[in-house]
Length: 307
Image (cartoon, rainbow, N blue to C red; front, side):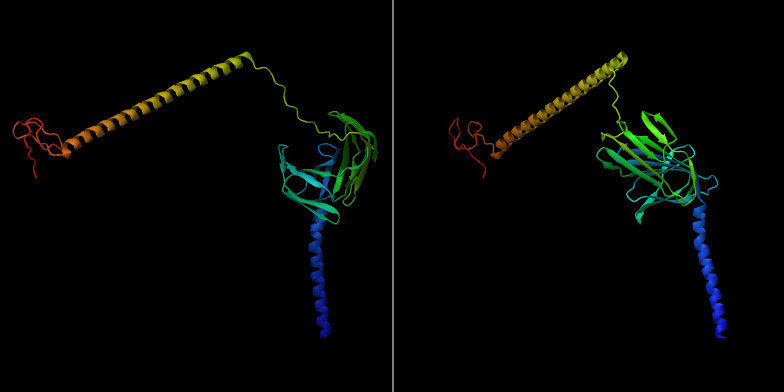
């Protein structure tokens, strides 16, 4: 009986194990099936930084289901600069991404809603005096139907040695370009390129934006500017006159208010003086007495004041 149960348990465990292996294998198989129909890689040493600018232009197979999750392996010291996808109008749109360093490599992960992906990153340039050395590798995370590398030689560089050697070369925007022949790579198959050259200057290749030269203004523009300036001056003078007039009116009104108040105060003071003491007249001659008088100033009669 015990042996029967043991056999049944082993069968169940075996089925669960197979199911687990199948579930783990499905994502790996789906990732293995993803492939790029076209991979264009540009290497621009000493372009806008004293390092190597690497640009990926990746095209996924038309049958790829979107959105698609991608993971690309980059060098450990890679500095990711841009991750973008191309919309229907050909415009690049930034894509959220993460990058983690694992086992001496940087893993770049992102989700794309487009079949066209654009990636830029920088990797260090090895310098030894005048000598420069570049070692680039495509790790082969996905299969590529056609992969080609374009190398831009910096201005003033000499004694270039490429491996593998380029099959075509040409000039673009004043720079000499070397391109390898397209190769087809399976998933997990890497591609390497090394470049050695010499250069006496450390100047960067990226063109420096030039300020536009000053151009004389047309006569009609000068006339318009003069008319506008005249109008501004006249409006300013008018505003100043109105301000001065308003201030003068305010000062005059304040002064008149002060004078009126002063007159009222003096009148009130005089009235207070007149009413402060009783008005007294002489009983004999009728002469009005002044405040403080005891006798009439006219006839000398003693003044009678009310008690």
